[in-house]
Structure formats: structure tokens, C-alpha cells
Length: 136
Ligand SMILES: CC(C)(COP(=O)(O)OP(=O)(O)OC[C@H]1O[C@@H](n2cnc3c(N)ncnc32)[C@H](O)[C@@H]1OP(=O)(O)O)[C@@H](O)C(=O)NCCC(=O)NCCS
Image (cartoon, rainbow, N blue to C red):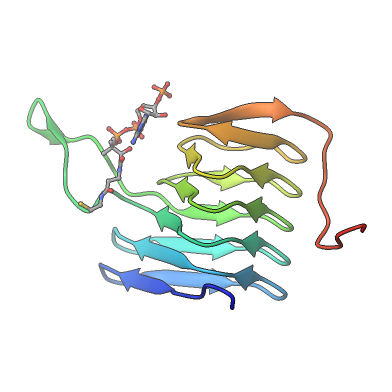
């Protein structure tokens, strides 16, 4: 039985979640915070379960009297695979054909055709791609 719990959390005004064609999501918490901010998930992305997207932190961090944690859009290009338990934070762009491994925290952009893991994530393999086909 596939796991399929989704929470779409629009916290502020003019927020949007754009999900393109052929995207599959087993279970995601997509929190869009910050005025006018958006999460875009490109064509043919494969999102596993317990995957979190946050365009902001929902509460301000103040340093020397100023807010330092501005909200920023999240964008997944085409054909990205995020494993179970991945968290993608504000401002991240993941370029096409890349993979993020289980439990990883993504705080910076990811280049195309790379395999990334860790907390925060880092590249462990280059020149990779992936397929929904199982090649049994
Ligand atoms: C911890 C947090 C608030 C910090 O935000 P911030 O001060 O804007 O941090 P930045 O995005 O500027 O990141 C600063 C550095 O910390 C790292 N970092 C950020 N969050 C991290 C986390 N949770 N664990 C480990 N490292 C983290 C980043 O990779 C970056 O590293 P670098 O300096 O080597 O490039 C934020 O990253 C976070 O975890 N947000 C989620 C908040 C949440 O869950 N809210 C839900 C409602 S209560």
C-alpha cells in the first residue's frame, strides 16, 4: 500500500505550489511561507515519502535588530529523485536529473546529474542519471 500523506501549507499571501506533468509524490509536506513565494516541482520528478519543502523558517531570526532569514523560492527542475525523509530548505534550486538520498538536508543549490547525500547535503557522485525502470 503506497504511503500518501500530503500537507500543502500556504502560510502567507500570494503563495503558490506548481507541480508539473508526470510528477509522483508518495508523501510531502510543502510549506510555502513569505509573501509571493513559491515551490516549483518540474516535469517527471519522483518525490518519496516524508519529504519536506520549506521556503522559509516560519519565524524570524533577528541579528542586530534585523531579520536575517528571508524567505526564498524553491525550484526543482526536471527529473529529480528525492529519497525518503529529505528536507529542502529556502532558496534551493535542484538542477535536472539529480538525486538526493534518504534523510538528507538540502540547504544549497544542487547541480545537474549529481548524487547528493548528507546533513547538509554534498555531492558524492557526478555524471549520474536515474530511471523509474527497475532493470530486473
Ligand atoms: C536553522 C535555520 C532556522 C537557520 O536558518 P538561517 O540562519 O537562514 O541559515 P542559512 O540558510 O543561512 O544557513 C547557514 C548555514 O547553516 C547550514 N544549515 C542551515 N540549516 C541547518 C540545519 N538545520 N542543520 C545543519 N546545518 C544547517 C547551511 O547549510 C549553511 O551552511 P554554510 O554556512 O556552510 O553554507 C534553518 O536552516 C532551518 O532549519 N529552518 C527550518 C525551520 C523550521 O523547521 N521551521 C518550522 C516551523 S517552527
